[in-house]
Amino acid sequence: MQQEEVIIIGAGPCGMATALELQKEGIEPLLLEKGNVVQTISNYPTHQTFFSSSDRLEIGDVPFITENKKPVRNQAMVYYREVAQRKNLRIRPYEKVIELLKDKNGTGYTITTSNIHEELNVYYASYVILATGYYDQPNFLEVPGESKPKVTHYFKEAHPYFDQNVVVIGGKNSSVDATIELHKAGAHVTVLYRGNHYSKSIKPWILPEFESLVRNGKVDMIFEATVTKISDHTLTYEVHGNTYTIDNDFVFAMTGYQPNYSLLRQAGVEINKETGKPQFDENTLETNMENLYIAGVIAAGYDNNKVFIENGRFHGIPITKSILYKKKNI
Image (cartoon, rainbow, N blue to C red; front, side, top):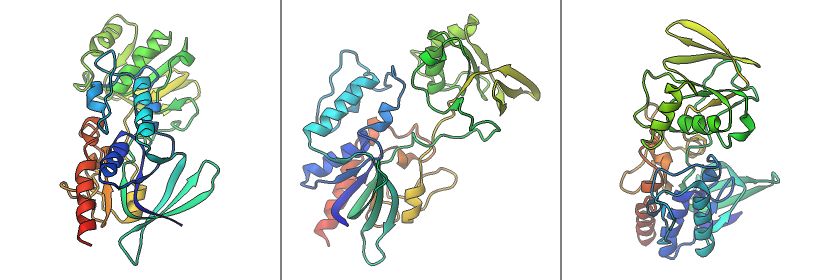
């Protein structure tokens, strides 16, 4: 069993930022990451542009300089890789944490991981910080056919869908971004959205282009639509009690995501059923389980619009202060 003072689960921007705060105080945490550095960003659409300006994505006092105000996916990946390298962060990539248990006889935690070769490793840490994000657990439609190979909850690249009948489910930013790219690649796109008007959360610089596609009949936009069944070659939905079936080759169910709470629950952290927020101290980000902290979007529960890189990158400050205080008062 490998002994560590602090282990951070997740090597995204917020996990890395927390590690850098600890590093300033002479603590060298170990980061366990089921993919690689900023895996979530690497899963973004190929041509994704960030909402935030590059300076608001900076961590560890390392400047993030780009030609345009808002960076694109590839620029962010390069930046965070350089930070990890320059700061010599101790990152174990492709080690998925499968178990997080509190030590019954102490205040630390035992962590079991499985690597890419399915080999198990066991660690013991005095302090644990969960910075696992939310992007890997979609909000499922729970309709017949959702598990078919033609259905995905993630959009990466439009080219494979040239001249295909594609349905995009959802009406917020990820849906709109995917629809625009799919149209550019020559897909025949129908957007199904439960709302009765365009979402106010859609980025203002892309809404006019999307509205133009709908207005000119380039994209079919259907409001107040509920998907009821996905078949091999068709998709069925309802609007105001009327049922419609359309030809369909592929489905992008862009219905949002939620945090994976399995590790928190294993460790004994209480989760609010209504909000999805873990129980934690707002001042220190320590959960109801002693010496177990959370950082990043997982602190927001189901409302992932409240915490993102811009503000989650500062979570390491109160966490570090809390750990230092505990160490001095042991």
